[in-house]
Image (cartoon, rainbow, N blue to C red; front, side, top):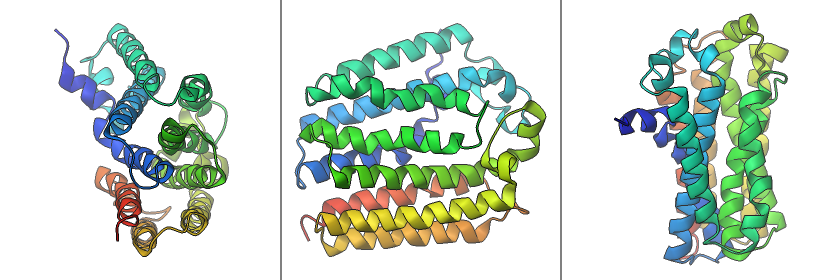
Amino acid sequence: MIDIKAHINNVALHHTIFDLPFAFMGAVLAANGSPSVHDLIWIALAITTGRAAALALDNLADLKFDSQQPRMSHRAMVTGKISKLEAKIFIAICLLLMVLSVMQLHPICIYLLPLAALPFLIYPFTKRFTGWCHLVLGIAIAMAPAGGWVGVSGQITAPMVLLCSAVALWICGFDAMYGAQDEEFDKSQGLHSLAVSYGAPNAFKLAAAMHVICIACFFAVGVMLALGQAYFIGVGIAAGTLVYQHRIVSPTDFSRVTQGYFMRNGIVSVAIFVCTWLSFYL
């Protein structure tokens, strides 16, 4: 019998908080504040199934490493609750649902789908050869606002590219910080990360620089689109969240790098999305 809960845990469904709000934000901006319910539903399904396929693929590709990593001992594939065959079937179903969902959006989306899907298909393997694997993950997540924007308007614009750049840098920075706690394990397995390549202190400095640039990009999006004051309040909340995240951890103390720390980054996506929508009505 299929263990639905195990599959939900395997793809960390709650982590959609990092990409779905930005997908909706892209749709809201492309539609000048009023995207259709039809578009929002299909965007949500496309993003959720695409992300689920990506996470299942990542866990499948990393199974031999996760099995040796104590921090990953609870994962469904490590414990045997999900077999490799089940994972492959799940990935295929999710990819099919993603394609069907994308077909309900602007016609150009189906032609751009291979390009949008490429980052999340290759990400699981980039940690084998580059410390900048975090940036590939960031680009993969940045396809969410791109998908929301193009799904509604069918256009690629400068503000959209800037928004995607901000999201990619945001993800890259906090993933590099979170992953730095595995520096020694990654070295022992021949895996790469910014911490492995440059040392944890320098990885944290790079993350801080990326977060400064990402906030500047978010701010610039608001200026370019002449968004209301509410939007910039959202950017301020995001900036405050990132400052707090950097203050409570350090390259020598990962005691507070928990799932709570990881999930707190979702404040960034939720705050900016909500304030973006409010900016059209306040």
